[in-house]
Image (cartoon, rainbow over all chains, first blue to last red; front, side, top):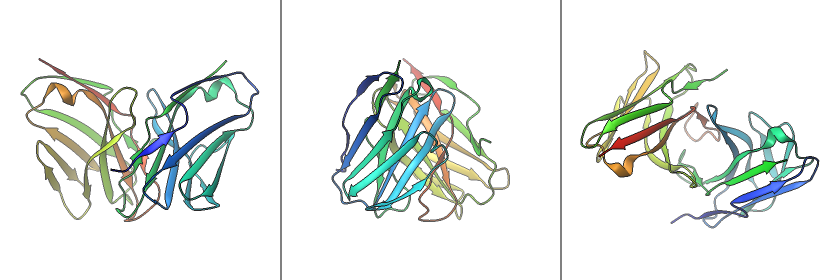
Length: 112
Length: 113
């Protein structure tokens, strides 16, 4: 079974702090994704990566950056956290099957 | 601009009956559609998919119907079971193998015993 793990289930940070969210997958997938889930808005794509050191902006990249130094690990970085970044963050990976993405359990981030 | 819309935020169905979840899309370039199921405190899990060359796909109790002319798809669950209570997201993609999925807002399904 594909396993996607995220470094924290719950995180509380203060406005202005730098925040790192880490995601690791164990299936040698090329493609990895970061989403945020907000009530009434569904899942919105922040960034994705189709190879090591490669990244592309999703629909809402503002205020975020990403890093992919190793194939199995994809990090989401909030350079200076703001209260409107309080959300559920979901990481996903995708391999050979065209569209099925496998999701991690999510990190609920609260920015005070 | 919401390209994939699930207009019912919630749905309540009696156990054993049919659950029908609906999804509309606006982008005529979408040609692959998926349904995901999400329990609280867990990530979404893939449920079933359909490509635009088909109008129906079945997997056990789950059937997805696609009406391309109406830009509408639906997920039928029959018979509904208490374990089906979850949030269901539909998602769409423009081309086979494309990287990006566009998700709807989700519908919370509650199955009542």
